[in-house]
Image (tube, rainbow, N blue to C red):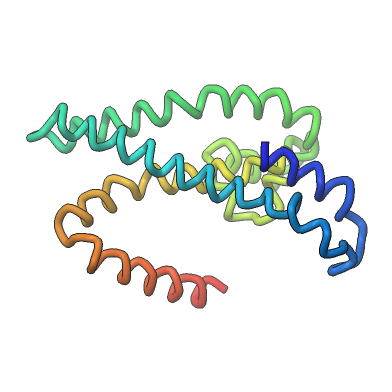
Length: 172
């Protein structure tokens, strides 16, 4: 609800106004953007639980657990995502089918690589940006869970913080 309220607020109140032109009284609906952060945190806890259950079910077979984890994740999001692309691309971004560059962008969308062209998700459906984030999280989660077990949070969390700052500075 917070995310929907935030988007309604930005589309009706904020859009088209110069930066800072929205009064301070609008901070409550603006705080709805925290709903996205809450979604990712909650998603992280649920996915970590799913991964750990698979690991317990297959204690000596990390490969089997990884295969099932990635298969479950793919079956959960890809079919609905690809159907939405099949419906939305001809309606919202038919130009993607008219050139080699457009077909390349279509391939990026179909393979969940929306970050490679920053404006690409917004050409079709703005919320597609979150799919790439989610897939990256799926890929990293088993390695993070392994590192937590092996090195503990006291070493891993500061390391991740430093790596995040370095990446942010380097990636600009």
